Amino acid sequence: MGTVFSFDVRGGEPAAVRTELDAAVAGLHRADEVFSTYRDGSQISRLARGELTVAACAPEVAEVLELAAEAERVSDGWFSTRYRGRLDPTGIVKGWAVERAARGIAAACGASGVSVNGGGDV
Image (cartoon, rainbow, N blue to C red; front, side):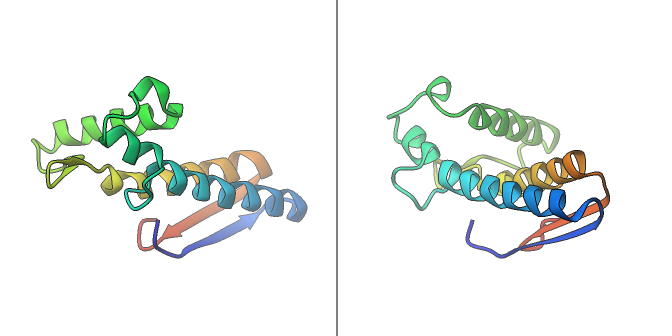
């Protein structure tokens, strides 16, 4: 996603925290692989070119696009998944990925507090 991610985890069993941090980092790399507009082979790039349908993409693509459609609706169009006429959900993907990583860590290792910062999206 072209940025640095940092994690602050309070509490939890250390070995479980380490395992979940590894899983969160893998999930962030996966999100970048799926949603990167800079990778020609990413699912979002292929979807934008019409090479894939949403149904043929990972389930996360539909989830993010639904979230983005809701953001567009509640912002009266100030938020959009279109940039220069092309599909580009990156305005919501990083926040979605940060929240997903934090929730995954908190749920799995018994941490009392988790903060994930992805280039300013916390």
